[in-house]
Length: 407
Image (cartoon, rainbow, N blue to C red; front, side):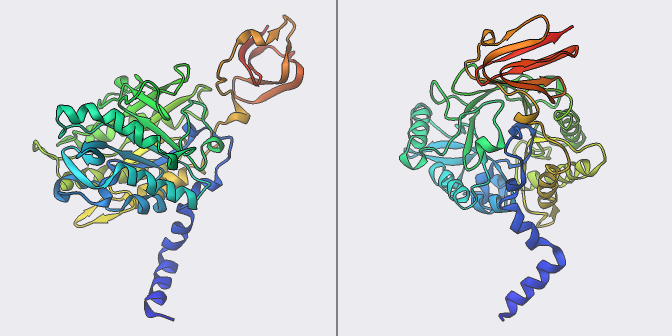
C-alpha cells in the first residue's frame, strides 16, 4: 500500500476527520422531511466565492476553501455577490473580483447537489455594484434573470415559503436576493437587511416569495464594521442566538433568522483579509462554545461565517471547522417543529372553507387536522372532526387554516 495512503489512514483514525468528512457531505440526510427549514442550524459562508481566489487576496479573502470544498465540509448557505464585468456576471467582494463567475458558481453547487440529493442549498445574493458604471448597473437585473432562466437550471430552484420544509427543499437551491432584479423573484426577495448591532433593529426584515402573500418575518444580524469593538459584535451574535434557539418551542409562527459571525476587526478605514481573520478568531469559537452549553440547543437559523472548515489560517486560530461541526451537530440536539407538529401556510387559503359550530364540531371538504397551541395534533377526520375540550386550536385542511376557540 502507498505510504501516503497509510499515513492518511492513520491520521484519520487519530483525528476522526475522515468520519466527519463522510457525513458532512450529506448531513441533511438525517433530518426529518417534515421539519421546517427555519428550524435548522445552517452553516453558511460570507463572501463564499472568495474561497476560489480573488485578484487581491490580501484584502478580499474571507474563505480558504473553494465552493465545492465548502459544500463537502458541510456548508449549506452561500453568500454570492454577482456584479457586471465585461458583459457577464462575475462574483465580487466589494471592488475586488473573485476568480469565478456567477454562472460557474451555480453550476458547481448544482453538481454537488446531483451527487448528494438529500441536501439542499440556500444562496443569498447581493448586487455588488461598487465598481460598476451606470451602464453596467442597468444591465445587472437583465443578466441575472437570463442566467437563472437557462435551461440547465430548469427545476433547480424552489419558491420561497415561510413554511418550507426539508422534504420540499431536498435537491434544490433556495435563492434569496437582497436586491430586486425582476418583478417576481426566483426564490425570494429579502427586505430590511440589518447592519445594526442592536437587537431592536434586527427584527424588521422580511422575505417575500413569488406571491406577495408569501411574506415572512426575518431577524437579521450583520454588524460587520467591528473595528476595535469585538465585544459589541459578540453581544450582537449572542443576543440573536438567545432569541433564535427558543423558536422551536416558544411559538408556532414561521420566523426566519440569519446571524453573522463575519466582520472585520481593525481600526483602519479599509478591511483586509487579516482583519477578517482577527474577527473570526474571536467570533467563531464564541458561537461554538455557546452551542456547547446546556440550554442552548435550538435553531440558530442561517449562520454566516468567515473561514468555514478551517481552524488555523497562518498565525490565526479562526476556528471555522469547530464552528461548522458545532452547527451541524446542533441540529440533532433538539426537536424541530414541522408540518406534523404545527400549521404551515396554505397558499390561497380561505377561512370560510372551514365551518365551526359552537359545540366544537368542524366540517370541511376532505381531511381535517386540529392542532393545539403547542403544535400537537389533537383531532382529525375526513370532512368532519370534533373537539370537546376547552382551549385555543388551529384547524387545517388542504385548502385553509382557521383559528378556533372552544369555551
